Length: 123
Figure 1: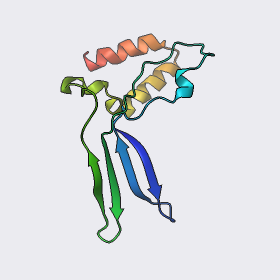
Figure 2: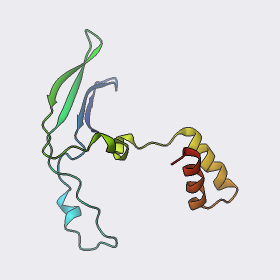
Figure 3: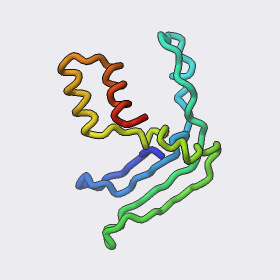
Figure 4: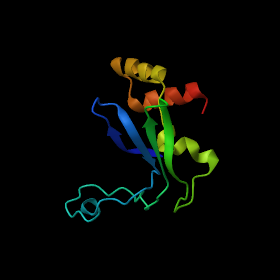
């Protein structure tokens, strides 16, 4: 899932938020048919999936309420053991960022930093 649209009230507070499947929609045609490419284009990731969820903020109850939920995906879902490869699960801990910054400040190469982090994680 990824964030899609949102609506704000006059005070700037979010009142409506919509999440969609990461494969929702299609790539813009202006990017698909470019002739002035320098690099190879990225693979197609969008497949027109309509799975989504929309929530509205109910001011009277002071709660977020699901107002729309579409669970039908137009593609196969990733197996559970591949969840760490999804964009929403990719993250770097603050302590790892601090360690990389300190290693960079003393001139350690990026490949050596990655090897060090892998050794620490036990992978």
